[in-house]
Length: 315
Image (tube, rainbow, N blue to C red; front, side, top):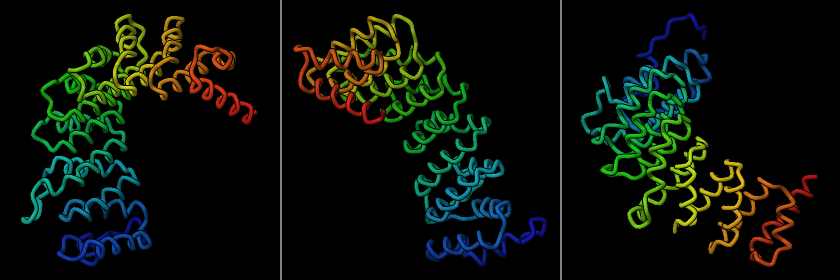
């Protein structure tokens, strides 16, 4: 069909069984068939229109995924309206929670459009504690992908909020801060890392994510380094592994010595990661030292040997 020929959206909607009480699969098959009949520009316009009038969650999810593939700026307004459930009247049989999966997909699609005007909408949903936690999680993730530094303050507040009911939201906010890469986030992340064992037992994954985010920021201040140094004594092995990775970026003699001490860690995976980190820092010479030393476990020696053999194969 020619792109300049007018399209009667209502007729197409009727033919595709949009907003009708029929099987969703039947409607989706009809929508899929439209791709063979209309141009990409026309399909985007049609799907955008259907997003405004459809009420069934499965069909809406399919439509959001489709417009996400096209990533056309014309979809931003309707995706935003759906995320906020604004000017979109749900079917009388469904409440707002019925559309949670649709709205989660909208947040992802919005971030993929890379339009920084959407940061305010995403922040609004993230900061609304009455909102479904899945929506808030998706908005935190979206803000990280969008990479807008305007969101840093809000994300810092979420990370630092000890009254936040969902630790997963704090984790997602920490990851987002690492992705955005603004040094203002360092203090908030370090405070999480500095929290003592016992208090943080149920939030060790938050500490892991905070260390990962700090690693991305690669700060050089003494407080950050001290926090990471102390994290090498954390009871959680994954925290210690993440800390090794963060210390590797410091490229100082003290950081290298701290990683070398982790070769004698009680956890085998920590030992393996320490071997890999030291290889990345010092090369094959360090692997040979580990293999020939009597002070390291067979786990460390085996890991060093595996890396050496892989290097030979690559050559």
